[in-house]
Length: 263
Image 1 (tube, rainbow, N blue to C red):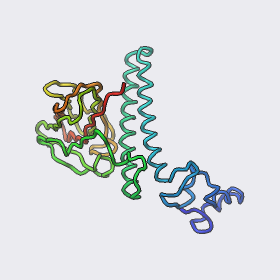
Image 2 (cartoon, rainbow, N blue to C red):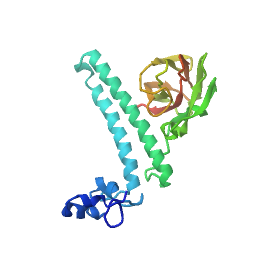
Image 3 (cartoon, one colour):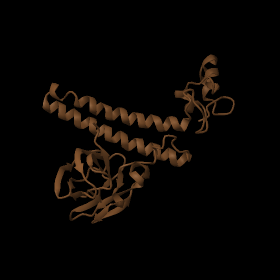
Image 4 (cartoon, rainbow, N blue to C red):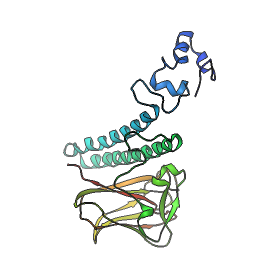
């Protein structure tokens, strides 16, 4: 927003003359206040040497990485804290780390769309290892547009019709090894959905989506994830997500993500 006295709303005039003069000029406005006082192009270069748009991309990737780091740091304390407290805090940190990824992608995808300027590092809009639910082999699942679109990967998810179970299948295309498998889904507040992750014929994990995130729709509020670590996969192994919703929940599935387990 242009809030200068010369060409904008005149907002800066409410400050004392010395302070107003500092904010009136782009050159003397701190980077963290630049977009509040000035209307600049996405390619405007900040004092850091980054463009405005690259700063937006980088800051959101860094924020999500920091949130993931909190989980790793907390895990190191497992033997020093009572089991109940450790598990309770871990669950909250893992939820926040997952939600940081949801909003990292939502915000960066929106800015990528509105600016038309690609991320110089090639991250925004590109997700190696991610398999969209709508591209998986589906049974009883149907594709559904998510509103707002940027709160779901590729703007869509799959939803399960009431009255039965649904499944989404994918065959591992990569090399053999140990992988972390993320199931990104929506946990609505109008019922309970029971999810299962199965590799080949072996059940790997089962959980209930019964949290209360304040919304009965698949959106940015209800987006969450489940991570299962160190699963051995071979080329062609089938990964299957099964869900049985109750109430008026839709058992909505956004994507799975398969990444090599970190050393």
